[in-house]
Image (cartoon, rainbow over all chains, first blue to last red; front, side, top):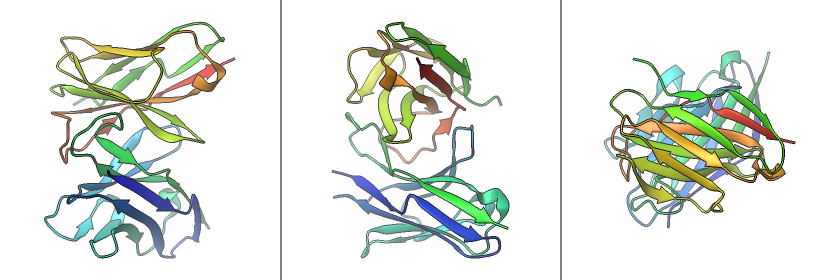
Length: 116
Length: 115
């Protein structure tokens, strides 16, 4: 069964500092992995996705994530944080056979705060 | 192209009442999924509809129901509201849904408060 764990419900960084949001997954088959971002009072939007084409995936707004099979991780990074990056970030894994969990299993989310 | 539209944006109801939420997917998208988002539980899957048929259902009581129309618009209904139903209800659409690597397009949600 697939699952996702996001380490740290809150992360705070200074503007210009490195952003690192952690995600570990569990899957018995090669997974599809996603990062979504939710800005206040909005729905989620896709940042990037891993579909086995390349282990380093580049997304929107300068974010990227690296798929590491040996570590079952898909951490999200950005070299330099901007105030506009303050939001909640969700890691998700695609479920092959749907069912009661739906087609995407989301982590609990990590709220990113950016200090001036 | 218009995005996913959810109405209403905010709702206030009292315990015992029922509520209907609406979702219009992106034109051409046939899959609509519903999620409940709360601070404690995060995002929890409610159900997915594809071509007017419920394809998957989450672990929610029967008070939560949904349907999809021939134009792919979807509604979800919650009967006999409880305080714990207070949440942000998100709708997401995609072309095919199912177990794929498709991107989900989310609406802004309906914020339901049950008093």
